[in-house]
Every structure is written in structure tokens, then in C-alpha cells.
Image (tube, rainbow, N blue to C red; front, side, top):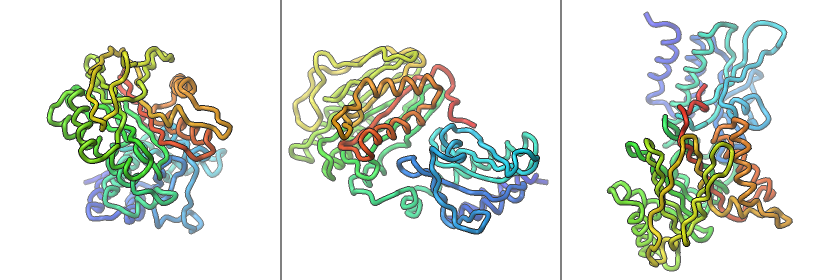
Length: 405
């Protein structure tokens, strides 16, 4: 005979095979009742990771529709920020039911939070809550690619065509395995023009690329799209980094007149920590080690020309040996060249110091980048003059368990 927990989780999984995103809250609530959970709520984060937005059709204890919640100002937001279970009681002085908030994770990507009122109990209750939250996350992710209602839900305002194209090409903003932790963030989320990032695991190698296409219009987005598509296409055929960058150069030149993209193409050998890269007119990556910036990966004497101009390469492939625990910082000019209303630059030193301080405080890489983007937005009074993209790659010193609960 199946236990209540097996009936709840197994039954929920079985009944959602043909369900739509809009069906999930009611199905989760129905099966959660089998293990004594009530008032279940599913929230997802918006594109800018500023708010938690409820899936449609959910009601609070008073019967009113659920409202969005701030990530930086609520208990639910704390569960999201810290990737931990947060609990509260109606009366902290009395025993009884508890209100739990749990992060929803797709691997290490934070997609939202799950709330439930659970009985007073032992470790089994918390374990069941974790398992249910994990399953809810899987269900949301499985319905997300073909749900326009989800796409509208996580947007606070209309999106430009360029942003629409690029968002559908980008990999998740967070990935981790035993050897590496990757996090990326970019703004403006709704009007991004020519910035794009990419990464992929290939056996014992990690491929990373960052592009910054000329301009801030739809043509810039298309240029970045061609760059990313050409990079993936040629990388998967076994080309080396210099040849891939030349193929991108040719692809952009064939499709556009006078358009170009700067970029970094890199490969990290996950067993040895050897980093190889090609710099096509881009800002050099930084290396953070032990709470200090220990290297700027300059291209000597100068970076190779941007891609799309047909000028060829002169410098070629560079290499650098990482140490376990090193963190690479890749970024576009919108990060360091962000101007405040009175003309003050955000600057390279402030950028690097921000990453170092949050790393020293034990803040996870995804949360550090979320806070960095919010800081840059505040620096420019909420509106960027240029696309701002940042990606961190940590060659893990140990198993990356910062984002597990």
C-alpha cells in the first residue's frame, strides 16, 4: 500500500501530464491536502527578479486574489534570496501549524517560491515540504516553454522585438555541477538590444561566450542572434575558438552591412582549470581569488578586431591557469560605464569590489548578480543608457551546494 506522501507526490505527477500551467495551483492544493498541507501558494519571479508573482487563480485565506510580493521585503522573498526554508507561525508563542516558504529550483536556477501551511511535526513534515516544492518546480518548468500566460505573468511591461528574440535564445541564468558554478544577469530586461551570453558543457569542457553587438535596436539583436547561432553551430562541429570567431565574423559580414559585435569566446577545462579564450574587441575578463582581483586577462598587445568587419585576427588564442575556487567575471560595457544622473561612472573598481564583498559575505553567485543589477539600476535612477550583462564562472573548490535546501 502506498503512503500518503507517495500518493501526494506520485498522484500529482500523474495528474499533471495533460495539465496546463493554469491548472497547477488547484492540482497542487488537492494533492497537498493528502499530507496535511493547506493554503498552498505558487509564486514565480519576474524577469528582473524584483517581485514574486502568483500563478493565476489562487486566493488567500480571506478569499481574495493573491497579490505580487517584493523579493527584498518579505518572508517569501527571503526564501528566494537565501535559498532556504523560511517559517512563521500565526502566534510565535504557541505550538501548532506553521507557515513555510520554500524556494522553487530548477537545478540551481531560482524560479520562485512555494508556500504552505503545514502541521506541527518532525523532520518528515519538512522533508515532504521539500519534496513537494521540488516537484512543483519541475512541473512549472515543464509547462513554461509553451505557456504564453506564464510569459505575460513574469513581465511588468511590454518587451521590444529584440528582447523577445534574445530571451528565447539565452540559456538559464544559473547552472552548477560538481566542477563549476555559472551565473548570468542582464538589463534592460525589456529593451535589451545587442548583448547576449551563452554557455554549454561538453564532457570535461565548459564553453562560454559573451557578445555585445553594435547598437540598441532590432538590428543589434539580430546581429547578436547571428553571432550566437554561428558560435553554437561551429562549436558543435568541433572548431577551435579562433576559427569559431572567424566564422562568426564571416556570418555577420554576410548578413549585415556595417554591423559588428565584440565578444569573448572561452573554454575552461574542468579537470585541469586551464582557461583558453579569444577576445574580439571586448573588455578583458577578471579573475577573483581569495577575495581579491588577482588578474585582468588582457589581450597583448591589443584585442583582435570585433566580429563582422572582416579584418581577421592577429593575436589568436590566449591561456591562463586557474586555481580551484577562482571566479571569472565576464561583462559588457553597460556594467562599468553606467552613469549616474550627475555623470559618475559605476566603474570597474566598484564592480569588482561589489562582487568581492558579496562573495566574502557568503552570498551565492546568483543572488550577488541580482543585487549587482539592482545597484546599477539605482545608480542610473532605474533606467540604463546601455545594455548591461555580467556572467560569473567559478571553478568550484568543492561541490556547489550553496543553492540546495
